[in-house]
Image (cartoon, rainbow, N blue to C red; front, side, top):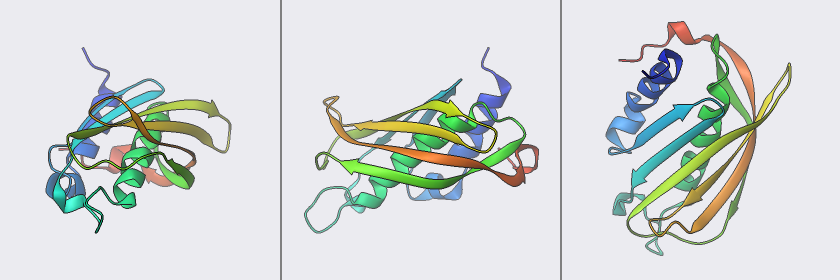
Length: 144
């Protein structure tokens, strides 16, 4: 049986208006120190060069790292304090998958990284970020 904390986080993510309407078809799996997000590529995400816009890279990488960090914080939602991205190659078809892993926890912040792959399992981008607790309790967030 899936951990209720992870399931709640998955539901929060999947039921966000942004993910239901703009990024429909997105999937997420969360476990301790880890998250994996997969999303089909749509032409709606393309810039003028017919590949996905950098904002989509940011979203997928930040979300994966964020939920890897949030997996161990059960009282309050986190906020992204900073996030750095390295782009490796453009993507224009198939799907993208981002894998986030938590690698550092201190009293004031959590650090996580993420890698994004295309349908051929080629690394297309990677990033890392610092996450801090917000004042919003997880229990106050509607997840259905």
